[in-house]
Length: 364
Image (cartoon, rainbow, N blue to C red; front, side, top):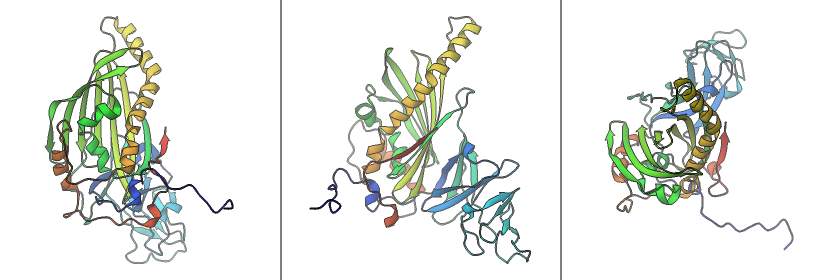
């Protein structure tokens, strides 16, 4: 055959978004940006469950989230501009105030009736911007829980996009059985049983981690969930006086594709045996030397799950084994975030991916 008429045969695992997903879109609060990405004077458009959301920050610091299409003739507002606190449509320069009301047209005539923007419920928590979505359009009936931060230094952040379903990321935190075979931890056990209460859950795990050049150390891990899209992971290596704190948020952008955001902090305890000034210097120096290494290590750790998430299928009921962790109770708890009957989400051909396990990443 002549060149140009052949291509490599498809092989390897198919990506999760190549097939109709089993789970639908969940309900709740979903992160669409880091707070630092929504700056005054600029518009930011992000995907959320098959639709776009336009974000902008007012001069007083508050964030607005609106549906993307101008009610006049449907232009995409993400192509518009901000003039003070007013959002200008790119098509006819209709202006919309902070309350979504149309204040003027681009040619001086009275605004048309029923031309207000649709404002979406939005919150800023732990350095991220969350937008509320619910399958039947209801208003928020619960609020996000702020989590404590570790230390005073600015966090490091990363974001990825991949095929799969966002519930797998949150379910991963109670899947105790995968920590050793996939991530290389020592034998893991539940230190405090999982508690599922309202929109939150919590579980503590004991394990062991081997640090290059330093050897093994007991590892203490506390995992908290808030909603079906947000996880807080705190770890401690007591032998080395090292603690980490990370928040992971997951957001469905298409029926079988999601974005994952990570915010991480790292702290080294001041050596108690040293005088206070020297102890502070040692702790600060260790943070400067190891902060980047620890962050890259956290990113590498979570990325070990990416090929699994991007190609796995939701099995229900699962065939669970001793040592898996409280996956069954987690799934029972997770049902509250889905429409009754769990209808399937249709997969538009535009979201099908070409290769399995391929994740586009952005790390800052």
